[in-house]
Amino acid sequence: MKIIVDAMGGDNAPGAVVAGSVEALSKYGVEIILVGRVEDILRALHEAGEREVPRGIEIMPADDVIDMHDDPVAAIRTKRGASMVVALEALKNGTGQAVVSAGSTGALLTGATLIVKRVRGIRRAAVAPIIPSKSGGAVVIDSGANLDCTAEQLLQFAYMGAYYAEDELGIANPRVGLLNNGAEETKGGKLQLETYALLQKAGAEGRLNFVGNVEARDPITGGCDVVVCDGFSGNILIKASEGVVSFLFSELREVFAKNILTKLAAALVRFGLKKLRAKANPDTVGGVIMLGISKPVIKAHGSSGAGAISSAIGKAKRAAESRVAEKLQENIDSLKLEDEK
Image (tube, rainbow, N blue to C red):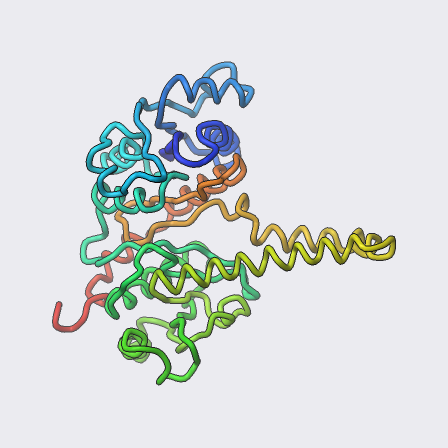
């Protein structure tokens, strides 16, 4: 399997991207195509301890780079020689089975939509991170790609998230919840009320395991496996969760550093704390998939280090091996409103 990697995308490119790709070679047993400026990639390989291009890695030249401050649509249309664009074109043409990039989220989503294309019948692609939860993990869809959504789009997000949870989390018949400001079915604005009705109907027909409205705490405490929301609300949920995790670990460090007894306590529970920390570690999570695109596109965090890039490549491999896009295409009629069939 070949994974195409945008070597120039991200704050730490190409060094961290190249080092992470080298790490992923043996870890995941994949071949990797590094797309970018050849001299920069060769220099990064040398810095990673490789005297020559390792077996299993090939370099695809691309002289331009899409900057984080570039307008996404304009950049994709005008910077045809940019590493991200060249990588997406290679995916479209079947040169590899998935793309990984730590570059601009907006540009990557735009490029994936315009070049690789959405699954036929899907209205919007969505970013679907997995957040740690008491039950093992929960898919949040959407987490920022689509700020304004329709009820039909949220219905499609529910299906996309459910199919992804089955493959990525190994959950049979995942529980789908609608993010809202209360559990009652009368809660929320027009969008939530319309979406609730569509999800309830899909649940009654046995096509989704819809568990009703969920509040922001419920996905983390294990109340659902997929949380459906517009990108504005989903992004707030993700960022708030990250803030809480950061705050708690900062406070724990202070608590355990107070005196000799607390330091001893820290030593006794350090393995448990490391395991807990790993659940929210970007290097472990790696990246998020853009669901609704016809082929796997993985967005790694902009500040990804080598470990995070390696994990993102592993996620890309799993996404390529799964059949999420195919499942969406096979069931596309279920994702449309009655008057559109």
